[in-house]
Image (cartoon, rainbow, N blue to C red):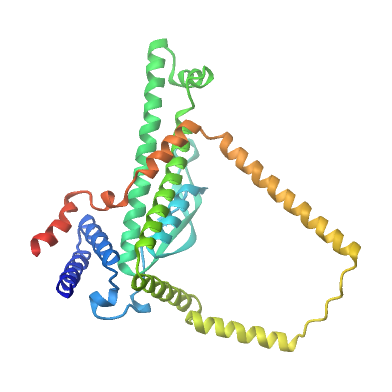
Length: 337
């Protein structure tokens, strides 16, 4: 058993070495395979590298734009958030203003507020999460465009058969009940695919947690502490424990200098009035959420949404990470042994 574990550790070491390759596909494939082996055999990083991971090992990955031309793309954020949570990395989001060219020439260029998300964590985790997010977003956009293109092809065929313009054919296609506009189909499919991807990632994470042993769980906790200390050191110049201790000391000092006045008990009528006000606030919040949900589903093509959701559930990160000429990274390791 010890000989087998040593062979696994040597294999992981070789895979991590390949993770520094200049070929991005080869590097991603090697890192993904190394993480799979470490999770399968409950290996901690210190067992492979011979030293314990420290705060200095934490890195920030390349930023991803989660706002496009100043318009929020919530589906991108949901996919990125889920990828980060299931990969053991954190997300830092920042804003910037960028001059972008309008798709219509008459509008020229303009400044748009862009939101960029950065992945923070151990290098192998950041790299794998970045490739996973890029692959999933690319697949969602590709499949959504293909779904919209099929509808566009029907509209073009209708315009040729009837001898009318594409614009009139689009209007007739929707008005006569043949289906939704291609842009609506694309947006609905995209939202459904993102929801399916989130479900797929969460299911995979649950499966990994159920198979994880105590050592692997300790590794996850240690990784969280390392990233948290890195972030607090960068933002406040202190570790998390030092920051919380300082915060508690300041709160205790303030409480000692400003003792709270003893609150007077409420009268029955005042207590009833506050309870009724709280009930009204809750009812307003519920109605607002219900109206927002109704507006959301009113603009969605349910058939396209369901198709996208099924497509998202069937996606897998590994084929995307291992695709291309570098798909043989694991084979290189096998041959090396």
